Length: 206
Image (cartoon, rainbow, N blue to C red; front, side):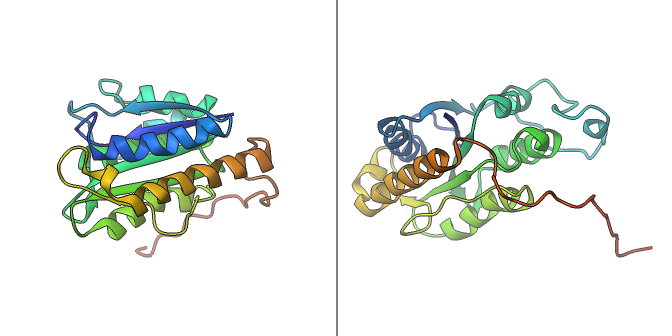
C-alpha cells in the first residue's frame, strides 16, 4: 500500500516538509510506502469552470503546470496526505488552486481514499487552514485521519517545526492512524460505505 504526500509549501525543505517527513517516516516504519511530491514554486492556474473535465474525467484541461502530474498519481495510491503553511489563515494559494482542479477533474480516482491534512503556522490561523484543506475530503467520501490533536505544527524559521515536540508527536500519530486504517481496509477505498445516489443538483436561483 502507498500514500501520496503533497508538500504545498513554496519552500521545498521548510517546516511543512519537516512535518510531512515525520508522517512519512512513521508510515514507512509501518510498512506503508510513501511518495512525497513538492508542488514547486512555479505558477499554478486556478479553475476557470470551463467544464471540459466533465467531458474528459481524470485530468484538467490545462496541462501547463503541475496539476495533472500530481492528479495522475491518484490512480496508484491508497491514501493522501497534504501539508501547507498558513498564509492569512488560509492554505498556500497555489496549493488551493491545484487541489480544486485536481480533485474536481479527477475525483473518480481519489474519492473514498483516506486522507489527512497538516497545517504549519507561526502563531495563528492553523485551524482555519486545516479545516479548509479537509473540505474536499468531506465532499468525496474520504475518511479523514485524525490524531490526539488537530494536524497542526508550529515554526517560523526553517527547522523550527522540529522543536514543536507535541506537533511532531501529532504527525507520528497521524502516520500510525493512517497505517492502521490502510491495514484494516486492505487499501480498499472506504469499504462498507453505501453506494451513493445519483447526483441531484439543486440550484437556489431559478
